[in-house]
Image 1: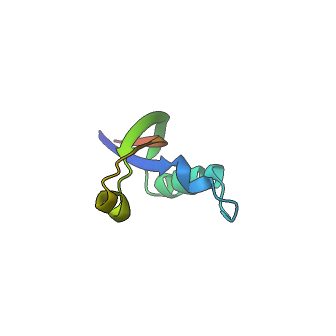
Image 2 (image 1 turned 90 degrees about the vertical axis):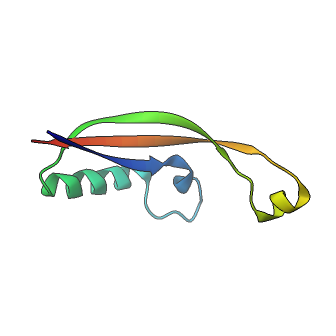
Length: 78
């Protein structure tokens, strides 16, 4: 049995001009993987703290951590 995961970051869907909703992304990913013989096992939400330090923050000695939510789509096939 084989497993495959796909990560979907929620922060990508917080902008007003975003044309694709998070549900549309899920639908596209599930349909694409299904056409390749993969079956959806589940969707798992993971909270991630990541270093948000950019060039300017590093220059000024600032450091901050951002909290994001990531969904992991887990697929399997025989």
